Image 1: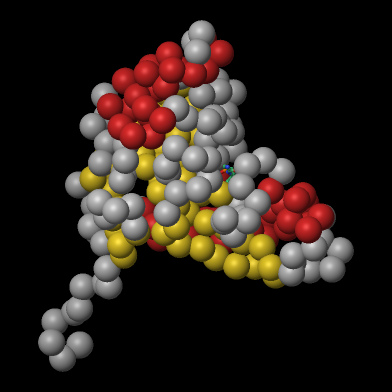
Image 2: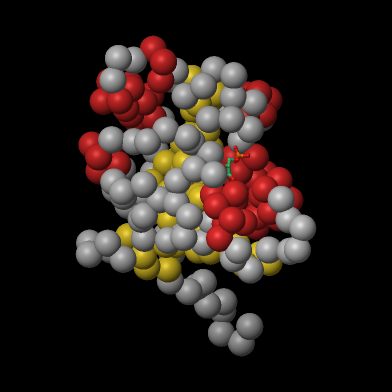
Length: 207
Ligand code: GAR
């Protein structure tokens, strides 16, 4: 059984998709938010998952917050830490501590449109496709090795909300997929920083 800790800051719909996927061999050990008012906490608690808050406002520095967050995470002995709409920039020390076991989802086809206001910037750029990316987290924001992406069309008349909603459907599909690969020991980060995804184990001969 692999322990998974999910970090959120708000709605938590990606966290919900991962919980609902009921991935065999995965235990969602905790959902932790940096915001006490994150809506996703109620969903986690109602599903019997430890729902905790480490409020970044209570700490004098990024380092102090990350240290408290890491302590809270590590109490759950995680095999994997999943950032699901976690809207805090993490220190290099924090990222290094979870190297190879820290995933993030971003609502663009990275390396295009990292950072905030992703959909608005995609619309302004006039791209005809948009999408979402799951990647391993490295110290540079939204820049880590790519695990899986999904593409959606940008349609005439799209506004930010319409495009975000179309992308979100794909987020809810590919994030549980990436977590499933990790839990099945089919996804890893190699020593030289490359993503390795191995094929599904073959069924018995003759299948
Ligand atoms: C998602 O669209 C996620 O990709 C994005 O925030 C949203 C969270 O929604 N994350 C980022 O922009 C991180 N750079 P959710 O709380 O419903 O999962």
